[in-house]
Length: 517
Image (cartoon, rainbow, N blue to C red; front, side, top):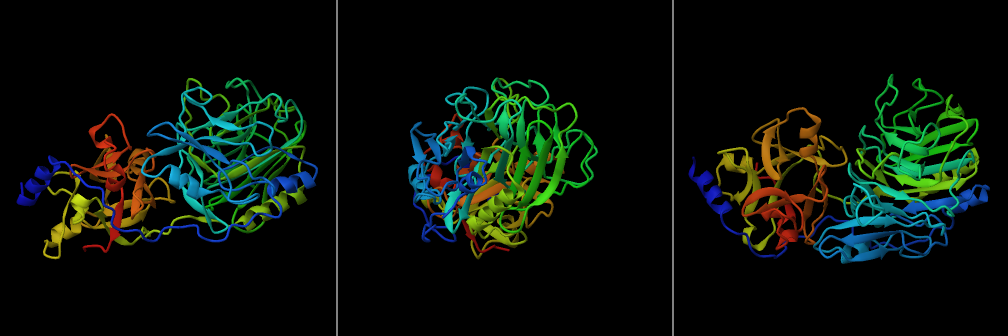
């Protein structure tokens, strides 16, 4: 063992202390002027004779006059709840209120309010929510900007889902006509069942053909024969995801890979449905299908509950397997006209969806990650040459070329999510930072989906208010942390020693420094 390795191991036995933060740079502050919309999507639908019966968003008001709460967050540290509203009626979410309430702790999104006033508020399907086996999504997992103002997405991973049922809420039932849209992301998807938004069963069971009428956005190829790679806008009508009007693959399907995607489904309940998709930042809708309902699924037998993030037969005893992002969406009574669809898409494009955090983590760039806790401001995240563990240790201008290379990372597009990042070792090409049993390791890319997920991290503003924090893609409540000079993914409080809340915010905040090699 080298003297350096011995020192690293000795340092692991010491307790890191101190909470001083070092740097704040490159983050979206959201200091622009808040502007209310003259007309929102639900105003457009009402003008077209197809009024919204459910309207949900974590980013903005969907009515020009809506000034109520958008969603509710809960602090993990003490269980306290707070609503997050809009900056002004018809405007963008007040993200600063969330940031203040959730400072130095983790928050989850426990409910997304129905802006129509119909009572179809989405609540997470887990203990403390609607009941069930799932949990609430982490609240700050995906910052973005809307119209130049900071907001947060509802970033759903497997194990997160939301549900609403109000028998007096006005959601179409039986074979009544219905339309739906949502804004989602083409970069955060999987093939798990089923990232849906729309009409679902009230009993959380698969109640037969036509019991659901929901948009599905995923790479799931339910009936096989898919000729292209997704993600796709499809219809979940229960007992099947439909790319068109039959179980046969629809050749007119187009993958929707934009960072922000508009997805639409409309269904007259007896004979006809249509699917549309678009880049939510610009351009017009593409009609993916318009024609007859699938044989055996007509007429529809809708039940009038609302699902987000899972299929209908979830999640009381089973857990959601899908991943996806939800920014906004609505359900309407009636079959919207093509002109109405086009006007809604134009409104979405004008809203100004943009990625929300400027970071130095550009794929192909090199970076060194410096600790910001007061104990360790000369320490950098690096791999230990004596094993595959990742630690923090000092690096200076007088360090060896090997030590400098061990503390240098090449940023790559996230192996599991291109909207996030992975870190390849500058000294060991093909080896990546990944977590295993909560500890950080440097290991060769195994080429598996599990490795890709374990090696993908999403950058966001530092939890301490300085630098950047790196959230685990597949364990989103956990962040890259140093604890006793070793690397982990850790929650802010928990059963493991490295989940200790003391200096957690500082230990999970990193300065993106000039690369050492």
